Amino acid sequence: MTSYYDFARQILLGESLEDKLIDAPFEWSSWSEFALPSTPGRIGKISFSQNKIKFPRKENLNHDDKKAVALHSFANHELLAIEMMAAALLVYPHHDEDSIRFKRGILTALKDEQKHLLLYIDRLNELGYEFGDFPLNDFFWKQMPKLKTPAQYVAIMSLTFEAANLDFAQYYSQIFRGFGDEKTATILETVLEDEISHVQFGAHWLKKWREDKSLWQYYLDCLPFPLTPARGKGLGFDTSLHMKAVGDQEFIHKLSEYEDNFLVTKRKS
Ligand SMILES: [Fe+2]
Ligand SMILES: [Fe+2]
Image (cartoon, rainbow, N blue to C red; front, side, top):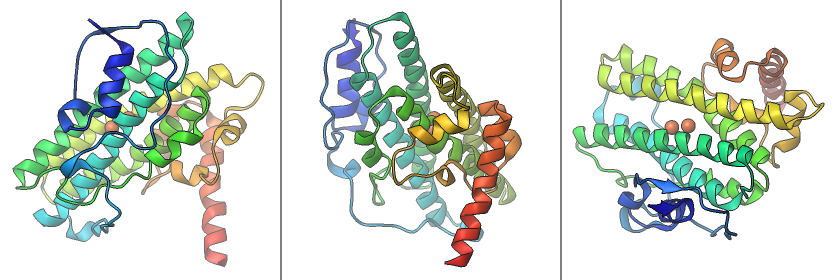
């Protein structure tokens, strides 16, 4: 049995897709210092690219080539989540029961992200494409150096990126179902179910750490510049879905209000 350190290190610094997808038992050996690399290990087709590709318009998602671009973009986010979760296992110290419990939660999510990545890759392959056929960006990863504490990590990963994914997963599963693509719709539903539990995980820990602050205020304090709560919502913002995941009425209210402010500002400019 290896240690948590070797496991997470192979995922983060290993260069192949096989490294990113490893599943091996390990033990929570005592924490060792780890310096965050400037970039995760990546080689060949899965390397980051500076090229950009436009996300397809929803009305074109019945065409396989456009569908592939969408699935590829979802898969990109899963791989970045896997690497950031591995990084979180490495960089944050664990010296007591609570911090190990926190990391066990990250590990559960990491394994779900591996499952999601595989589901998307299998579907891409069925359509005649491979992961890496389109450019892969590092937007999520670029936030990692700013996440100095576990609270900042869950504020960004769980309550922002994964929270937005609740809406996106629901929105696109409905689009694909509308086009009669049950297979893709079902994958997105599976992802949605798991993401609810990932957001719940983050909310649980933020509530534990917030002391006398409201969850919303603590969340705002944890968000690194220039990210705003607007990033925590996707297309078709669904308050009941976010409420199920976060379980804090005030938080959900402020989040929905935030969109209004954001839209007003945008309209003015
Ligand atoms: Fe995921
Ligand atoms: Fe997730």
